[in-house]
Length: 318
Image (cartoon, rainbow, N blue to C red; front, side):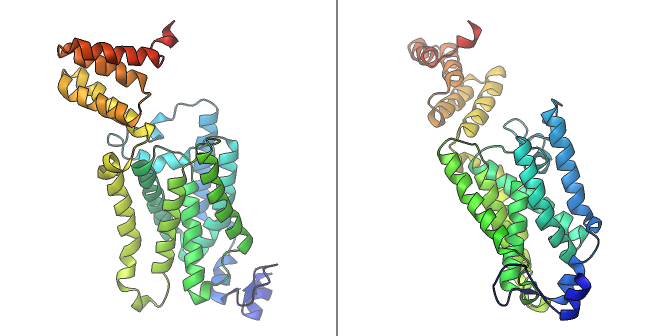
């Protein structure tokens, strides 16, 4: 089939009906390679599939998970957390779209560049998710990064027009907004920030790769600069950007460590911050009372203990 395509000099996605959506012969030659030449894409799919199935089976893979305890202590969990998934449907959807988009990216830009793309997209999307929301799992940020890359490349690079089937674009854009709606309704807990950050990073990369090589100039720096910005936001901006339960639990963990070290005043400040972010955080109210009691402020401590009991503290022990 590809020989016939190359003979005509261009190719149109079947069923698009759009004039001008053609792919140039060099891109077709790349796409015509054997599918198992997509080594980076296949490796990522195998890693994500195997590790996720192991987690579904009860394997302890916490060493790969990003959470409030590991952000600074285990920095490799920022990219490795994308390899795990919440359920089989989550895994299946991501692997399917990764195969559809990843092998196209790898065919055009090569295996090692694709490995770097995957790594930057994983780190950048997870860091943004951490900065604004909380820990998440799954390859969705990488998938949306690949979508953004192909969308921008096909929009701003003449020889890559038609790389994205319009039906794929409609599906991913529709799913993006549906996920936001489902999250707001409380139906599902979805890493929407990772989706958006991945798409932004991918679009920035696609735009920076467009046009003649000698005219790209500073555009080469946009993708790594945005990735670095998201990492810095996760590392230093989270206290000022994040007001979610995840941040409250992180502050509580800090306060607990301070309390264990005998730093009661600092711990009290942390527990107060945790309850200001999450007013129904019964453990934080209880520990706040403990610190107040140690500091001799018994009346205030009793108020905190009563608040914690009203929220259900200790019910699990009955």
